[in-house]
Image (cartoon, rainbow, N blue to C red):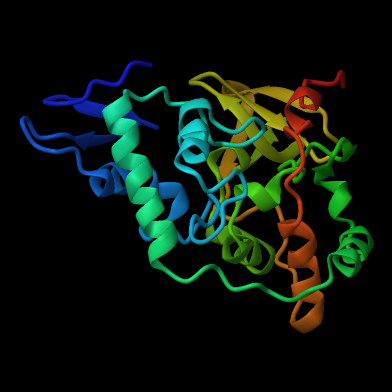
Length: 256
C-alpha cells in the first residue's frame, strides 16, 4: 500500500495520522497513532514487544526500517512499505524511545524449569510450539518476540483481560439440544464457524440455533501460578523467538 506524505492521511493498520502541509513530519505522532496500540504509548510493549533497550531484530536504523517495511513473518507485524521521509521520521522516534529510557529489566526465571511447567500444566493441549501441540489456541513458536513480558504475565494470570478478536469464545446451542463451544473463526449474518478444542471446525446455521452466546471471557483458564513457578514459565515463553509460526497452516478444517 502506498503511503502519501504531506497534506494527506497516513493509513497504517487501520489507524490514521495526519501530516500537516509544509511542516516537518512528526515521528511521535505517527508512532502514537499507528504503533502505540501494540507497543504501548511509551514503547514499553503490550500485544507487541517492548521497544526499549536492545531490539531482537537489530538496533540500527536499517534494522528497524527493515522490520517496518517488510514485517515479521509469523507475527502480527505486517509490512507497510512507507515512503522514505515517513519511514525516517518513525525510525528516528523509535530510536529516541529506545535510547531515552532504561533498558527493560532482566527478569529472573529458569526457562528449562518453565518448559517442564508448560508440559505438566497441559499447555500443549491448546498451544503449539515449533509444530508440536494443538492449534486450538495461539501458536507460541514466536511468542517471546511478539509479546512483552508483562503482557505474557497478564495472559497467564488473567487471560480475559485482553482477548484478541480471533480468539473470542462463542457458544451455539441448537434446537435439537446440541451445544458447541469454541473459538470463532468466521461469522456472517447467516452462519458462524467455530474451531473446537479437538481442533475440528464446525459451521452452524444461525437460523437453526436456539441460542448464540458471545462470551466475554477467554477460553483459557486463569492459572494460579506465583513466585518462582510463574517466573520460570515466563522465562520459557519469553525465550521463544523461533521461525515463523507454523500454526496457521495447521488450522485448516478437519472433517468431522
